[in-house]
Image 1 (cartoon, rainbow, N blue to C red):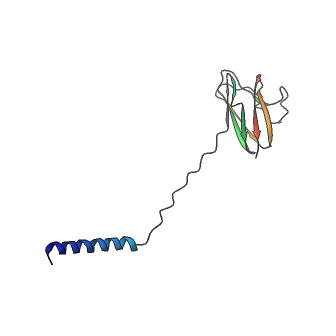
Image 2: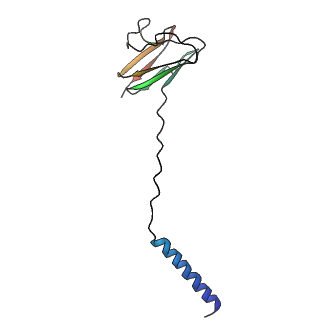
Image 3: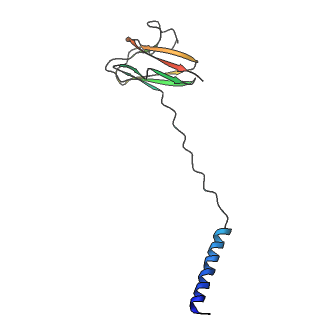
Length: 131
């Protein structure tokens, strides 16, 4: 046997041993990675100088909707009908608030709930609560 044949046999033996190791070693499952949960949807309605945006939003019962005053005037979110706000009692900011202020309300009852800016009742929108 020549020197090159011995080197070839040693190399093949090494490859067989290494291959055998990888084929027979126990396979470990990868570690479980934490699953990132999606953030809850932001249920925000902006009040701007041109009105509410979006004008309508659909949410599930128990969802809190936040109204943000981004206008140059005070905002007073209230349930329809103006001026009594009796369509959804309790859905009433009760006073005007300046730019940057927020008002949040949790909608429990299924239905379409109209609202307006009490200080400018020509601006209005609705929250649709559905399963």
